[in-house]
Length: 70
Image (cartoon, rainbow, N blue to C red):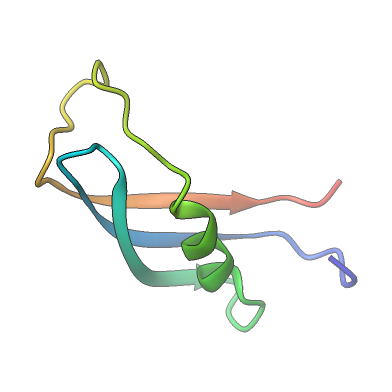
């Protein structure tokens, strides 16, 4: 935030039976700003809606998390 840098992190996740996500860090752009670890922390709050098309428990998903600075 102090440097006013935005970026994007990609997490590699598996949808749990509860529809929560079990994620590990993937890639981030730009590198070195901690976007992957920040995305991993917030991913604990994500739950896939039951009516979300094409996503079911046990599936692997690649989750993009964008960080923007206004």
